[in-house]
Length: 550
Image 1 (cartoon, rainbow, N blue to C red):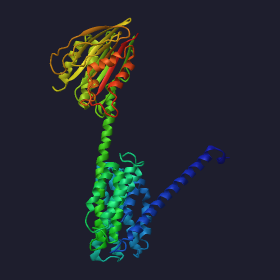
Image 2: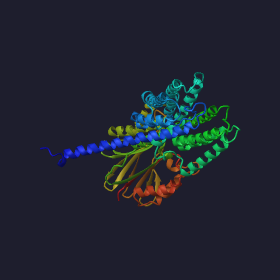
Image 3: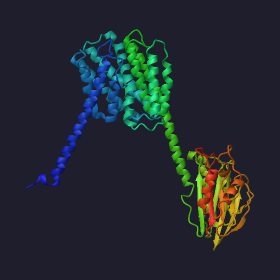
Image 4: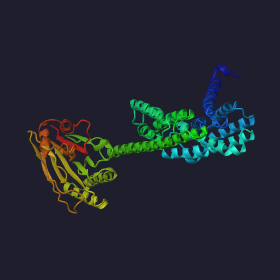
């Protein structure tokens, strides 16, 4: 005999039943919520009906219905149908007309969502300009013809509207539904997809000031007959630029609420001969202003996302052009420092590399490519990998730089130039032999054990300019405890023209670091030359310090 209550099978059936029951409850709650929101907004809209009891120039439920389908799926259509039915149930029209209006309102939302999803790849967040334009074209202009046509036909069948009034009633219905899609739907879509509202640069105190200003100006504009409606545009632009989609949508809704309230009361610049025409004028103005603000917000947020992506790409690319960690060189100490200009927004041209060569010695390359961005990154990558490749078959620094010069001239345009310094280090016991060649690069400084500082080498010719650059090799012996400082020119003129450091300043700092390890030397240089508060350096800075271990 099977015992369902005492095994996993019985519990599983119970759990599945409970889950299905919970899902059913949630679904029923969603249907009820959509119906309640639709009915409440519909009753409010019908209070503004004039020519025909069932037709109003202000119809927010259209926006509620479209947002519900776009966010919750087609399965929420019963909520729209129920809301439409309850809204029109006591309007005094025949039952066939109520059913027709219900079908039209429901089908309108389903068709609008289908068109946006099927043909536009619509995203409810409205972060793309295309999404805003498609909402206008397919949601507000096209899908609303469904409800207007079916609804007016139902009124005609139920004898609730005269035949000669059909064009005017259809226009009012269509424009009223269009306003719901353009003013209400964006607010609901953005509220559901942008939470928490902290991506835009604006913050709470500024938002409060904006709300107060927008409300005050709107009351002033729509409470008097003088046409000053253009005054609200700067505030809507402010909302779009600083608070992006949430600001644009919420600001438009606030203006719409004030404009409709005063216009319905017979006040303001949009008051015309007929009440419906007055409300249509007010709603059309707010819809145009709101869509303009949403388009501006989409452009602003798209640009911000593109800049953020560029920063992330720049950081990733910059990291790929520099060694993550300096390798351990036997009987040598080393440290490096790199600081890009502009917080890494553009890929810099400074680079350094420390690696083992083909003959077992160690090589250090430091360089500076003219320019910023992808082109500079490509030249930086070429320089770094050319130097590594040439080190396998060549040992003399000057010949390796000559090969880099040929590669730069061959692979890049005539205006592509760079400076580079290539040095080899051969450690023997407590001493090391340093051999280097410079192609227009700042010469390194040697910190001797007795505290003296000397510049080492000759500048040479910039690489990429001449077919045969002047490149020479220079050799010096380093004793235990002696260090060599390599750097790019950004170290001395990082904050030019406001502040430029001289080579003598750098030498003085270096003398004060006698006996210190490389990381301490770099820290002293950074504190003296690169500490400038919140100011960003105008040029990249690269520093490498090598020291023979005591």
